[in-house]
Amino acid sequence: MLLLLAITALAIAWLRDLFAAVMLAGIYGLLSASFFVSVDAVDVAFTEAAVGAGIFPLLMLAALALVGRNEQTAYRRPLISLLLVSITGAALVLGTLDMPAFGSADAPPHNHVAVRYIEESPKEIGIPNMVTSVLADYRSFDTLGEVVVVFTAAMGVLGLLFTGRAASPGSATERANMYDHRVLRVVSKMLIPLILLFALYVQFHGEYGPGGGFQAGVIFAAGIILYAMLFGFGNAQRVVRPALLQILAACGVLIYGSVGVVCLLSGGNFLDYSQLLPDPLVGRHVGILVIELGVGITVASAMILIFYAFASATVNSEEVA
Amino acid sequence: MLTVVVIALLVVMVMALSRALLGPTIYDRILAVNVFGTKTVLLIAVVGFLFGRPDFLDIALVYALINFISVIGVLRYFEYSNDRHQGDNP
Amino acid sequence: MIALLLEGVSVLCLGTGIFLLVSGGVGLLRFPEVFSRMHAAGVTETLAASLILLGLMLLAGWGIVMFKLLLILLFILITSPTASHALAKSAVHGGLGVDPDRNETS
Image: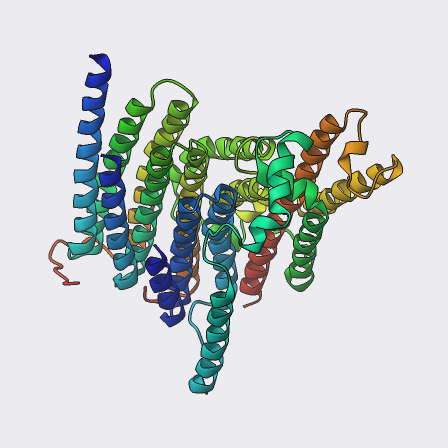
């Protein structure tokens, strides 16, 4: 499996046709997710499936539509950069030699806080999926940081690309529908509600199985992007307005942060959910649910916004040309 | 029996990967990615079965969804850019 | 008796699935031209996937696992032919016309 991974990575670097490189990147995502599955890291595999194999190629393609598909950089000093990369790689490999053997019982991560998390988590929080409890409760501050990073990234892309002008229907975007994909449209009409429903299942099932806000947001966004691709960006923007999305993206972060403030007000630490309700266990459940909701909303609207930004930039550049 | 299925799936995945690497036209690569995705769905379902972890089926389901969406996305993009640069040879 | 029968049917399904899977893979690798490769992969893929999932379903017995497998099966049954269709259509439009005389070697 790792061998396949290495071959794919080499091929990506080697290919000059960026389009084929994106296709291989999709395969890379699928492969690494299978790898995570085989080492039993279900949640990570889930994220890799949704992000690495789904959203990432789509966004890359949207970017490619903007810049054209052939690599144009001339490599001037390949030797020096090759040397630099080899040295860095060697240093990293040297670093791994110092690490304890894979899966050995006395490795630091197995002795430090992980033991406590594994032993106490069922008692303290009472939800079956330990990854969710670590992510959303013990490490909730880190997760807040990640959500803010996603939000900031979306805002940055918007600031660079988004013109706010909705593509008028009948313009260049609609012309992309020239090969009238009737079969695709009918099938997608059947599938899109299913996809959105499944995203909600992942969102609210995160305590019991693999999943949670990040993955659900990405799946939701993928459903909307499918609609945008098949029915035109103009139509999609009329269904899900960019202005609404901007507000929603901010609201998600706001929900997360205000949960923390509410905890603070009711006498606990920041993001200490056990203060939310009289029963600390139920309070923690509610807290995790609410912040996962915030994460999901932010991720979904950020992804759709980035996609809109690329799409509208492409359309505008074409109209100018 | 399940082990045999896993091995067969891996072999076919290698075949699809080499088609994606060789593929003279872009459609070969898209086809290979599509086949690869379906095989990954099956692989995850069978491996989940082998390990007795039914959680894996959720991941397989996500894969089935995502695979379809990304193939459609690639096709849409490709038609669109072909439309823009006429004579852009695949 | 029933259990034995179920297991036998499931092994039969899985075996046929493996055969179709491998033949599809060989076709994908060896056929000389885009459309025949598409044919090899697209035709075998749906049936192989459904047979393997069916075999797993028979092994699983009633329950949530079977329901999820059924969901995946339905999903593959819907999406896989659609994706093949869209791919072939866009290949035809993209300048790779179907030409019976063409005999390109890969």
